[in-house]
Amino acid sequence: MHVIVVYDTAAERNPRILRTCRKYLHHVQRSVFEGQVSEAQLRRFQAEVESLLDLSYDNVIVYTFPPGTTPIRLTWGAAEPAPTDIL
Amino acid sequence: MHVIVVYDTAAERNPRILRTCRKYLHHVQRSVFEGQVSEAQLRRFQAEVESLLDLSYDNVIVYTFPPGTTPIRLTWGAAEPAPTDIL
Image 1 (cartoon, each protein chain N blue to C red):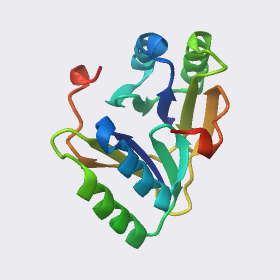
Image 2 (image 1 turned 120 degrees about the vertical axis):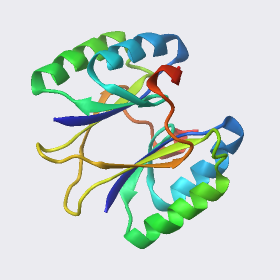
Image 3 (image 1 turned 30 degrees about the vertical axis):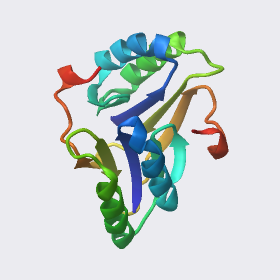
Image 4 (image 1 turned 90 degrees about the vertical axis):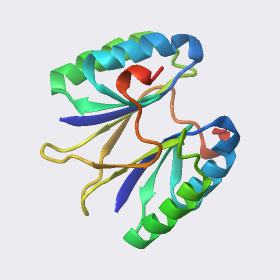
């Protein structure tokens, strides 16, 4: 299924969250990832991310879509940087 | 139509981008907004946002969905703060 993940986590946890997101999804903006995962992959991804979070502070929103539904992505402003340029 | 907007803009432009997003959408995470807009509202919103952007730096991603399609939103970690708590 198609998923979009956006996170707002404390700076000291960002690098590990980023690495975990990169294992499953494509990096499309500083703290935004997107891609296709199976139900099983999403469960593993959730377990890995939740093991890194401070539940009193960090917030991760995950949008999922019914099979066959993919959002249309528009970009306003600067072109999206190449993945390696995103910190 | 349902839209999700995520932005990565220079700090000095964030307050005006934030105010513009709030005119059209609900604030769901630090730089993430979501809601229902018409085609005409989306065009006005885009014009307002683009007038604020530095096109060499700022990036705004807008996800749109076919009519009748709404993503499922999951939250991992901390509950989403009340809108007034989001800077």
